[in-house]
Each structure stands twice: as C-alpha cells, then as structure tokens.
Image (tube, rainbow, N blue to C red; front, side, top):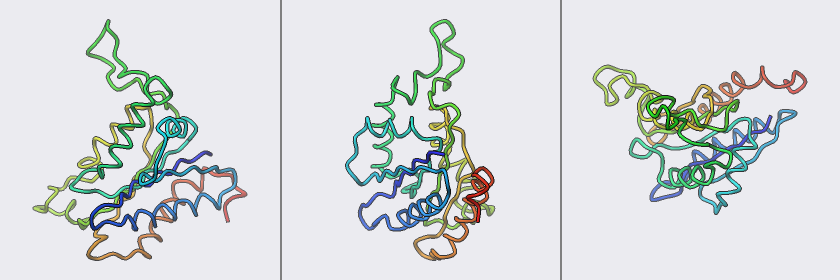
Length: 204
C-alpha cells in the first residue's frame, strides 16, 4: 500500500502547528511499522512543486489529511495548497472534467475524477469541545463535523474520485488538551481501519 500523508497544520499567528505535527508523526510511525507500506509526506509549510504533488496523488492508494480548523474552515495555506495542486492536476491525473457533457449538461456533475479506486482519511483538530456538536442548543446545532464544516471538503474529495474512510476529530485541544490520550485513541482508530487490510505477518 502506498500512503500519502499531508500535514495541513499551518504555522501562523499563535498557532505553531504542533498538534498536527504530533498527529502526523503518529501516522508515520504507525505505517512505518507495517510491511509492504510505502510512505510519502507533504508539509504545507514547506516549499512544494505542484507537479510533484500531483504525482504523489496519482501514486498513492491512500491519502491521509491532517488539519486544524480555523474559523470553521481549512487554514488558508492548506486551502491554497489544494487549489494550486488540484489545478495542476486538471487532465493530468487528478480530475478530467466536472463529469458533464454538452449533450446532457445537467447530469453527472462531479463524476470526472481520475483517482477512482483510491481512498482518503481526514483528521481535524478543534478548540471546540465535542459537545458543541452533539448537545441540543449548543453552537453547531447537533450537526456533525463531517456533515457540517467538512461537508465541502468531503465533496471535494469525491469530485476527484476518492472514497472516504472514517474521520477522526480531536476536540478541545487548546483549553483541555490530553495529547497522550488523544494519540492512544488515534492509534486505535488506525488499527481498526488498517490492520485487517495489511498482510497478516505485519500484525504484531
């Protein structure tokens, strides 16, 4: 299995990107211990070549995104990365078109992705507690992360042909962080998703 890990934890203002760097390192450690897995890594804070990033998407069987949520959206440099790389991937391996035809312009929108058969997973980190999404009367009106703030992100990945795996969301990481516990939960999440699919000899 070929895995592309993208660290979208932008360094900006009071954010040093440390939490998402920790999550990224946990992901690298997990897959590095499995036989038959190749890893490539992108950090959106580093200088990158859009054409090379397109090649990474085409190469990978699995893309794992790690991102904080700022003002209920992706950090601006991560969004820029996606805009630049996906534009470079138009008719170059990421997507061919929006899927419609001149003969039937109202149907099949979003079916022109070229990454069919590949999967993705996303983790997010929030200052908001999980209860802000689940309790009646709280801020997100009982709307989940995936069906609310990340809805567009998931449709973006569907547009290029990727299928989702279960997301992982870290809450209250500024005021009440428990990084050790978060990483234990995250490791269990990775094991649940990926160990059954990896070669038996790689499972300890």
